[in-house]
Image (tube, rainbow, N blue to C red):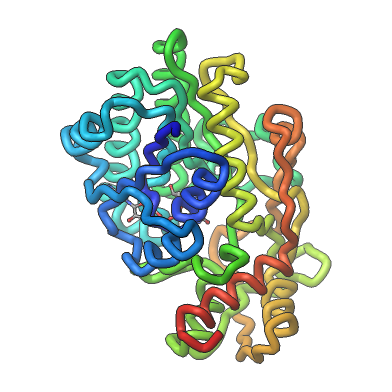
Length: 344
Ligand SMILES: NC(=O)c1ccc[n+]([C@@H]2O[C@H](COP(=O)([O-])OP(=O)(O)OC[C@H]3O[C@@H](n4cnc5c(N)ncnc54)[C@H](O)[C@@H]3O)[C@@H](O)[C@H]2O)c1
């Protein structure tokens, strides 16, 4: 079985990708320092897969630790999927050094590992934040130019992509690197056994709804209802986390099997459809029969009215398109939280 190193694999998207990899015949090896992951997710992985997944505790900022893992795995690694990063936009404004150090050092080490051990494919978790505040939607990959990202988190992704491109070009004979620019991953595994469980304070919409379900928060705030959108609230591209997970397996095959003709490539991962914040909040209540206390407040600085992906490239290069609906994602997220609480 082909081994894939999943760096940051105990986190939200990483753990779901581990399921997708195992289902498609790969042997995932999780590498994580549990900075923002709860070891409880591992039980869910075991339940879904019917066996334990290899797990290595390591800090991706430390190259020696990573290299030792590859040695211990027999050196035979088919690909690296690099999720490890700090991911909160607001926090990155107050801790820019921490964000640049963690997000860039860990990526440099992952690339170094790929080069040193002749690992043929590496996927980098990029983000739609690299587009900054786009004025047009859907957003095409070509909308990226340097300097659009508006915060250290987004800039670490933008710089990360540049680094990937330069390294991939230099080692083109042995390596393909693919950046996946995700829009807004939400939801949980359809079994309800695995889902998002951050250990840090979250800033994202659906995790906040789940905090309310867990009794950790009272109400949800909608920031502004006077945007130029159909219902006045911001529109985003919410994509089911299992669809995002599948995109990684397909993306790794595209890169490592060299169907990717250029040394470096970058692809949007979204549904291609915008859904408003109000639609998500109302859908969550209706689908799960869970009433929420909703508060509408002022707009947040920097929020743009509508951001959703142009997915043409994902379809043409990867043959990938999202399969789940936003409604399904909201139901799966709720089921996961009920399971976590022991009330499902
Ligand atoms: N969730 C989103 O909305 C979203 C959107 C776009 C891009 N991304 C990117 O996708 C990736 C995964 O996101 P996520 O939502 O799963 O985040 P997450 O925080 O749940 O997962 C990241 C994982 O990396 C681990 N990690 C962080 N630094 C590490 C280090 N130095 N060494 C080892 N492990 C480390 C964390 O413990 C965590 O398990 C991140 O790079 C994030 O920036 C996420």
